[in-house]
Length: 152
Image (cartoon, rainbow, N blue to C red):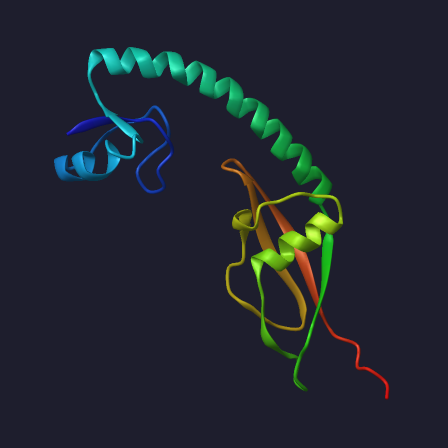
């Protein structure tokens, strides 16, 4: 069955693409969630008009994301965590902690945009990707340091 995507779907396509999917997938998931429409002439025309507005909005969002990426360029976020003798953390550094540290530096990023490839469970420097927009991904350095021991 041919459908026109009304939204980006990872692994399937981007908004406005015409793709072929199984009828059950279209009927049970795509159509009820309004992320695709049947590929009829009327829907093609309607989505063509909507695509123009969408493209203009996406250009603006891309520009904002690129500005934020420039702010984050070369930025290092320092987090302090409790660690064992060999530099192994008790727990791990989460995307929420990284997003909060960025917020303290004046950069607002949703925690779901922070992509931690593998759990950060050791002290030291780690590289993390931040997907600000579907086309804008920046790299961030996270420096994990041990909590200073309290003197008694």
